[in-house]
Amino acid sequence: MLSLKLLAVWSHTRYTAHGVVDGKLAPNNLSPNSVCSEGETANIAPLAAEHVDSWENLQDAVESLSGRFILTEVNYLHAVFRTPLLGFEEDFEARYDKEAGCIHLRSASRVGFSDMGSNAKRVESLKRLVE
Image (tube, rainbow, N blue to C red):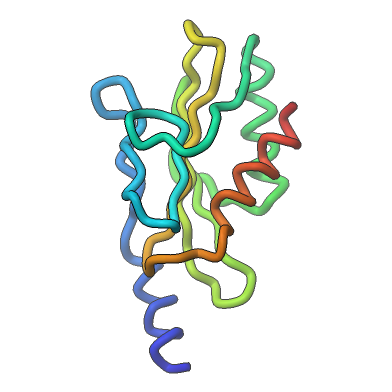
């Protein structure tokens, strides 16, 4: 149990968010504790966003699920969510791609290998709130 508490504390000190690099979100880390809609390692679909309201609705959805905003820009956001049971921090990023009419999403745990699907479930919850 002590080791789980140490991991939870450690998760508060390291980010998995990398921002927008070469016009895209960073790829996911190929472990089961991350999901991403962009790049060669994409394993989820992006969020359809045909108008700017979708971007604003996503920010509202993040807030409604208790996400803590780290950075919000015109076409990028980074928020942190905590897992309910152990308080692990997980990074959520979104990039609004106006030309493609979508919002690319990335969510990743900061520690461990498996997240028991928490990032994928959160992203799907956010999508439902926006759509």
